[in-house]
Length: 365
Image 1 (cartoon, helix red, strand yellow):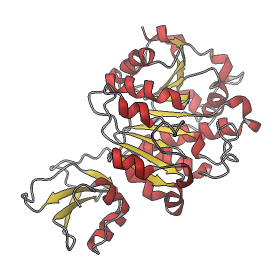
Image 2: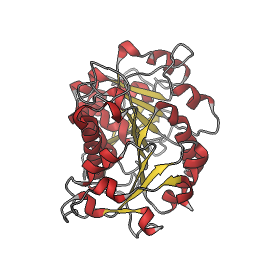
Image 3: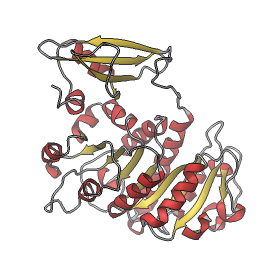
Image 4: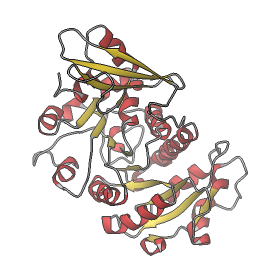
């Protein structure tokens, strides 16, 4: 039973004395300890990695409910964050079609989480991290990439790190050794947050580490970072994740709420979860298949390159994808398809290769 690995939530700790109205998100929440099973059509499961999540849930449950929102189960707190505990919990949720939202993780938990996801999923994991640092090696003490890249049991297809700050990072060294690691600098994201959307769309698991935020936005973060994302940008990124049809896991962490001034970090965490759920409610559920009549294909062959590109535009959502087309292949034979932007396509038509395409296809260019 799933409750063997959980400390169940006492509803009075997060609900308060007043009942939820039908317009509040809490009216859609039920507690696993009261039912012992999942209700039909449950959409999300809230899980805590420690006992600090009550202040987040209190705020989240009083926020507005999205029209058509399906039930949300409050599973309580994990007894520990080891892969042996996570695996049976995530497996039951996966079999029930429920998306886990895990609160309060630390960077040291990431390896255990990815190991559990690798055991549960029938596909390779494509995590996207929102973090202020990226690097590998013994001198990079806060790197979670080292164990991820060293453990064969973790089946990772690609890794993206968003909002990293160049003065803290050595992404060039990482990409020389691991070309499937992609990154987007804070400055690039700040200039146009839409550049982050394709990175998020290519992922199926989101890890949002609060070090990526300005300290003023999240005083309980486990770093005193004077630079970083604003709260509005954080919510936009989690909304992108919710809209992504492939996103099946969401974790937030690297904060300690005992240092939370005026409950600001808990409030922001609740807002980020709300926008993830809101994004999910607005999924287009479009498939990249040859039978999808909403896709328009554009073939681009930049000058002085032996490689061409096939761009796909969704007439339904305006989203773009790209694949590589080698000159020696038939136009009908394509490679793996990646998310991209209209700007990537536009630059390619002017014989310019965007940073996104350079990362994706560097071995072919």
